[in-house]
Amino acid sequence: MKYVLLLLLVTFPCLAQTLKPVTVIKQRTYYLNGGVRTTLVDGKSRELIKIDLPAHTKGCYYSFTTAPGEDGTQLLNLGLQLTAAIYGGTPGMAIASKIKVPAGADAVDVYVLSAGSVKAFMDKEDKKWKSHRDISVHNAKDAVQYIDNTRYGNSFYIGLRNPSALSGIGIAIEVVAMVEEVVIDTPKAELYGDLGWKAYENQDYKKALTYYEKALSYDPNLAYVHFNRALIYLLQGKSDVVDRYVEAIALAEKDPDAQKIFQNALVDLKALQVNKPTLKNIDAIVELVSNEIKVP
Image 1 (tube, rainbow, N blue to C red):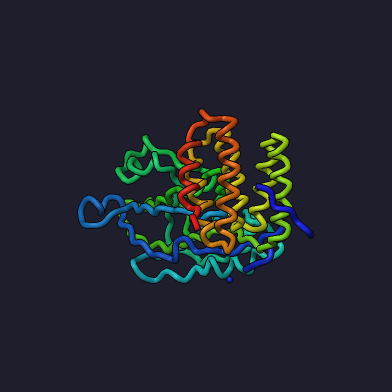
Image 2 (image 1 turned 45 degrees about the vertical axis):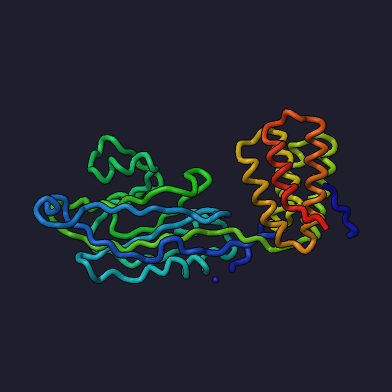
């Protein structure tokens, strides 16, 4: 499908994008008993926090502090501090070093865990679980830590453990993601979309995908670019190609030229269907898009 061209936010110098802190876990306070006391009285010495980072996260931070009892922990204000600290820099430990954390009172262990280690951690089977040691913090009263989600993914767990056998401890923790937002530049997005289509016509699918990704970085709502990208995924036999078409349809339905977009997408699909009739999912996707076209 070819379209011809006529030719709290913190600005971040990367093309047409900005970064903003998004609170994933608002400050929470947990009270953990000492390990021995959990066998004598109600309570627990470990806690688990599930972390799901938003789409377009470019790194995240967690900070914590401790107090000797169930009350008394101070405000962390991680999100507010990151808003100021990120200006003129990129996410990482250099930014983390600018964050002030209230002084803690007692030591705690904070582990970053994958899903496979969760059960063993909570069951205290300490020889059966592993943490990401370089982003975990051991025996600390307070700290701030950066996590590179390109290495560790967007879903993980934070495990809290009271290392004391007898003394209880209060732990306040906050988790904030740095989320990339797109500053819409539709003309530039359409330019890259047009280049992507030309690369597709030349059967240079790798280059076409590069252009389509660039187009969507400037305007993620261009439905026809989503259709064009999905067309390549269909050719490549991607397992999630139907989901990609469903997403493209949902975006197109919001466009004033929805019917034109659906018709052009169907033309492209039928051309592919003629040339590659045995292509996996081609018939189902043709039907899916056909159902969106309104007959006068």
